[in-house]
Image 1 (cartoon, one colour):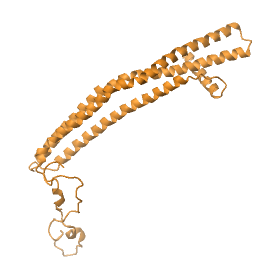
Image 2 (image 1 turned 180 degrees about the horizontal axis):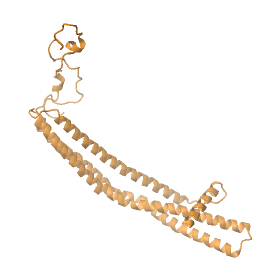
Image 3 (image 1 turned 60 degrees about the vertical axis):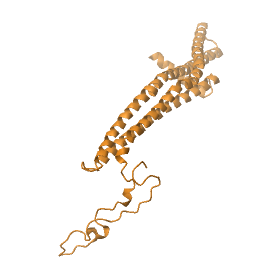
Image 4 (image 1 turned 60 degrees about the horizontal axis):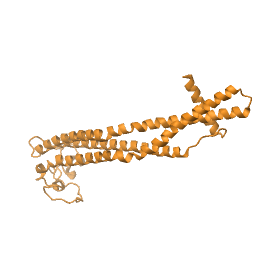
Length: 288
């Protein structure tokens, strides 16, 4: 534990010296480019996974809204109404839509998320190796800095000089070994993505097509139950509450008034003017 803390302090000191220009810093342009490409690709891949999760959430929201619509439609009809059977069927089909969502979720989990998580395991390993490589670089630069200072000051015992040289050599070889490994692995890993992602791409699209084709098939069963419904019947539907001009709300009550209700009978007022629909469709029956 103490050794680890000592190394951490040494690395922090080396960073500070480099920042102030008091110590040399090893720069590997080729590695830095590969590391930047790796970091960018890793971030984009995780972002892709997030988008697919968001897509699943949107489908779940759609399914929840479908269920809610069906429940509220059911609430509009008494059991003796002609449309009650259609409402019951719609509610039942909405349950099938929810079951369909679970099927899609399974397809995405098996055909996308799990394979991607397995594949990204090597990205996590590479990320940890990059961190270790950067630590070893600091250790190497620190060892070189200490050896250089010892040689420039002079007067050090030969044994101390030899020990410092050995530390510098071990730190250098340790750094170079891992750096060379990453110089091979990082470009190989980032260029491998196209080969790997083809099947995942296809699985996502297959899942999308499956979901909406099945969704259409399920809701398509409502067609016969709704064929006789005039899609524009609502445009001529009259209000059923007492007309505004005859409402008791607009009348003043004086002593001796017998009636407390509005005059002029019941409803029958015209509804607010409704704009013609922007879409086409038959006036009665058929899809809009």
